[in-house]
Each structure stands twice: as C-alpha cells, then as structure tokens.
Image 1 (cartoon, rainbow, N blue to C red):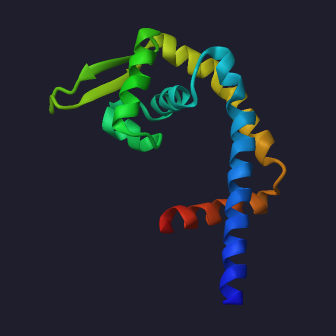
Image 2: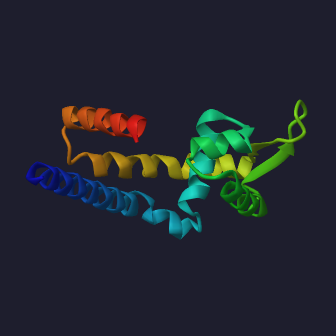
Length: 145
C-alpha cells in the first residue's frame, strides 16, 4: 500500500509539473498572437497550411488536435479575415479543402520566424540532449495514453 501511495504521488506530481511547464511555455510562445488578433487554433491552421499545403478540414483538425466542429468556427473566422479559403472537394463533395489566401500566406511568412525563435528560446533551458530525451519521453507518453 505504501508503494502504491508513493507511486501515485509521484505520478500526480509529475503530471502537474508537465502541465505547468506546458502552460508557461505556451503563454510565452503564443502570447504575441493576441496582438495579431489570432487564437492559438487559428495560428495552428495557418501554420499547418503554410507548411503542409491545402488539406481537407478533417485532416486539418487531426493535424492541429482539434475537433472538426471547433475547426469549422476557426476556419469561419479566418475566412472572414480573408486569410484562408474553403472549397468543396471535387472528388468527395462531403469534404471541404482549405487553403491559404495570398494574404494568409504573407501573414504566416511574416510572423512564423519570430514564433519559431520564441520556441527555440523557450526550449533553450534544456540542452540538446535533454531536448531529444524529453521529445522521446513525450512521444512515449502520447503513444501510450
């Protein structure tokens, strides 16, 4: 019983530390997006389309870890700002393909370098080996949870 309680405490403590680290890094990395009137999800869509090219909403939702329902609202708002366009898929009319407009592409091209620099800075508190090890541990957790 004593082992179980100490094991449980360690798991809970580790989980809280992971959440705190995630929230701290996320605030640092994503904070400047509010100045651009972008949510984290909106930026995720723009960034994914910029680096991966046009894709259907379903695949985009999986890529940025959001539900398709939530993504519809995100894309609606990006469309209103003329940053993305949505077009019915010609092969399967149940799906919409989403792509960046020139305005969207230019925005990501302008803001992504600073975003990447903030990530590099936030992760610089870990050595390269620690970053590799941490990446492997995160991947292990993601594949088992």
